[in-house]
Length: 208
Length: 208
Image (cartoon, rainbow over the protein chains, first blue to last red):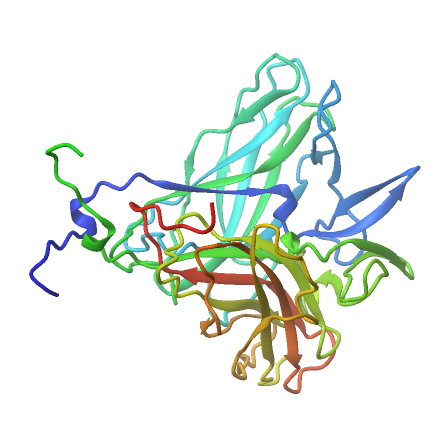
């Protein structure tokens, strides 16, 4: 190191970063089924290679031309793999989750979501993220707006276990655990968002 | 410029940033075909608008509810377009890449991957990224774990040629060049990750 100014992370109150995974990037999207005249994409959901639920559908009591993952019943879920970004500070990650969704109904429904996740190091087993030995973060009793087709974001909820420096990513599942009086097809998942602390100068990131 | 302190990128030693392209974001996914009793999504593979291989399938000797690109044979590949991030330091991009995949078998197989890339400026011709004048990164043989369904991440490998300041994006193809004793459909692509050096204060990003 020369005589120039050396600025380290301790001197910088970095803002937390966020990463959003839209439903279109979830890797549990594998099967399709013909539904009448329309070819709809189905999501595998604990049923192996057979077509499952939930279904992808257009969002909105009023047409929006935007599709989401339509929750038909409690327990519907989607799954994926998420590699950790290099700037994630694994010495103090403070990883949080929240769910973005649309609520079509006009009642103050109170759905619960669960985020199942399994931190993974290189060459560890790639498991089904709900049935495997996972941590679960419950996001409870989100009170929806009584305005139909409202954009809903849950509260930020901290991950029960945090990633370690040996991890490279996680397996994730977002589950509608309880509909909270919502009817079938009134909740559409848009995606899941993560928030985490960063270091930009010191390499305290995930495993290289 | 006022009298305040002016701090440039030179005062910082930024860590490399990363970006992950999941298989769900690859643009060669375009065709569908019904395969017997299962309805599966197929991938075009250098064959224009006709259905090709490889296939999307559920990952795992044991069910995981997560799908990937199932490699049927050496030469299987997927392709896409990706824009260069605005914080890439175009004076010294230092771009590396690595492959995330799952190996569902228990042999110490040694697959070899290739990344074909074609740097693109505005209004440059868009070409098929394997058959046309592209650069190729060939990875060394990656020794897989003998634990079934292991998460595998290759070593980082530098691009043979780095993007120039006039470039705005890449055409990319990720190819399984040799199966390394793996049988058909024992390797599933999760996605492709890039690491690159950054400037966060100066405007030295890719082509405006």
